[in-house]
Length: 319
Image (cartoon, rainbow, N blue to C red):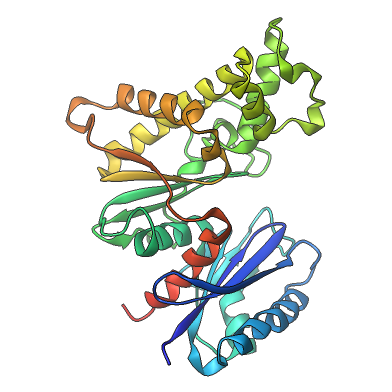
């Protein structure tokens, strides 16, 4: 029987996991709560029970080649999660070692955006590409950089944090990092909300967004208003695309990728976000880089993508 991989994606709210074959078919998948576990040990106990239900459905542990994990602040070199601001376990958590001890299977771990990049290279839009950048646009902004067919980890395992690159000196405060003006605080779903609230406060323009309570404002409501022709909602995406395009231009001139692949909830805004992003990226590039880099939305199904990315780490274990 052919080998299978276990993919686990740890998020601040929930942890998704599944059993995946080499072709990228998710055979079985499920999810447990992350946030209810204040201790990592109880989290691993629940995860073990839930994953083993799926293992038993697919022919038993003997078919499993290993476990791949994508996690915030996951360090590929050490197998640890280090100071993840959105997880309930603080400090340095030796997650790969804890999982290996529990499951008695080899475990490899990296951060969630790097896992997404490897998944895209193995199963998605980056198949066959050797140089590309993966950008995840969700609650935050993550990135994975692939050059010469290799994911760039850097000397300490934390390379590729474009979301924390400063795009506006002395700009918005980021409560998670304590820094000002980073890409993440502008080009994430959180950033879209903040931009919408800023534009509403600075303008007297009529807007469908004025009836939305501040606590309920989110990128979906901004998109719904933009679809109906709302001027401020469209300005929110124009501004977001401008900032993202500028950051992507810097990334292009640094690593000369064949493509930039965008993934995550914000890509659902379609041309409202993609057109200004492309325009401002091209406007900020010097001539030798212009009109060379494809801007592509991920081909992976969003509900499976995190599991696929994590599982792809397993097939790379013996490289």
